[in-house]
Image (tube, rainbow, N blue to C red; front, side, top):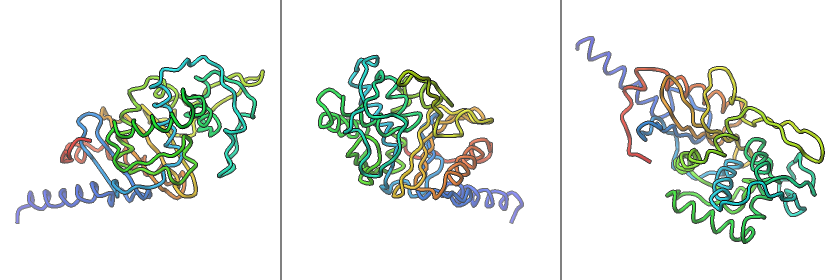
Length: 278
């Protein structure tokens, strides 16, 4: 057998393992990487299996709220009904705090604040019931056939989706300038109860050296594990990645780093066979 044959065979094996996730040794239980340039699936790992999605839910919450074209300067109050009674998660926003809707959105997306997300749904035209009806319609419109969302924060383990569906959601969310601007800022500042409060992105890769992040959202609950959605640009290539159910933030970051290396590798990136578009 020729040397060229052996080289082609070795490359085929390498590509097989890269496409299945084994070569990258992904720590996340579910994953997908989609080219933003041509829609090809570059990598997947149990990408069609539904799993809890934690605060990745808030991207859907934000889209549905923005679709209703509300007054983003209208001040809305955090109510006792917005307090997390399920997981008893902490919040920096005391009950009674009144903020413009645009800052509630910033809190929900950048800081992943559950009270802010709950307030956005509660003050949706028609209330929570109308909000959830709109969420269901949005899920259908995006073709997210393996997705169920029952509340706006992601605290409920009944909010489930697949990596494939979440890639569709991320692609749709990238069409909202408000969502893009908020989720790609490393930090921000708002006025709350007469004082300045600093906000920090829950995704520490945003603003980090070597990362060009075009959209971002993290999530964590005990049931969902550590989750991450990002749209990134690397070596002239644009891609959407979804990582679900990693055991630690460090594991999620390592997966993302390995995916970034995959995008930067000219042989793997050029040789990946396009899969059907999402």
